[in-house]
Length: 170
Image (cartoon, rainbow, N blue to C red):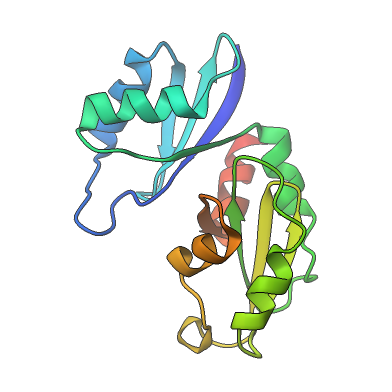
């Protein structure tokens, strides 16, 4: 069994409510064990007997819950690397947007061209690190804007949420 973290996009926002009591059984019905959730924002930790497919999980969740839920997977070691390697050295508020594949090298230039002075970006592999040096309302971005400019599906988490998940996994 190998442990994985499923980061679900757009869960418990926009009227799409998913309760822990529904999410855990949905993962168990797909053959996963040791399932637990963290917060109400679509963070699911589970054990899998074989490498899971994000598309298969998304399809299983849609069958169980009635609407599509894009799913992004990471191993604990991948999550630890994201948490431990802050490209902004702890300054400002950091979010990390997770994708399925390595990001296009031009994504940071596209974001910088549309951003404001409070937004900074660093792309590392499948993750886009986003620093806001003011309040969130000062930023030129929200998740859908990041996704559109990146040209690929993404789901974002605040660094403090990721650190709390990592702490529970260590």
